[in-house]
Length: 122
Image 1 (tube, helix red, strand yellow):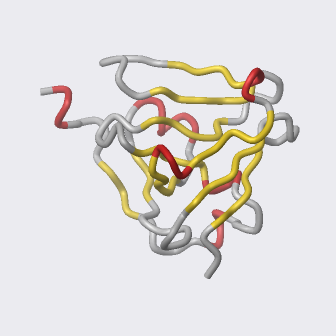
Image 2: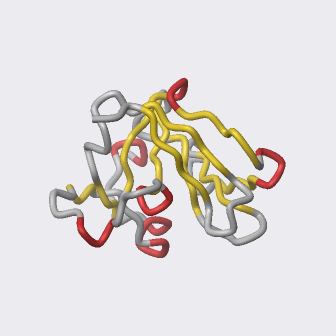
């Protein structure tokens, strides 16, 4: 199993290097208002395990609600690549559809997370 993975947005302007010691694991979907609309499956990477190797100047980010999570996307093609997690700010959630060689439609073990009733909202 390889630890280092490459990821990119659709147009290729934003490219990431991911250090995932256990591979593409801990797959999840969330039903918060943002995740419902983008419909992605994510995996986690430690903050030091994600490096923007190209296109840092092309990344935009969006925050809402508690302004804790930072959702990054390519300002050219609009693809969401990753976000700094609200439930664990020491990690990034990474869009598995952006990881080279991963087809999210072939993934079967995906956990559903209740983002509508997030503990940080209480």
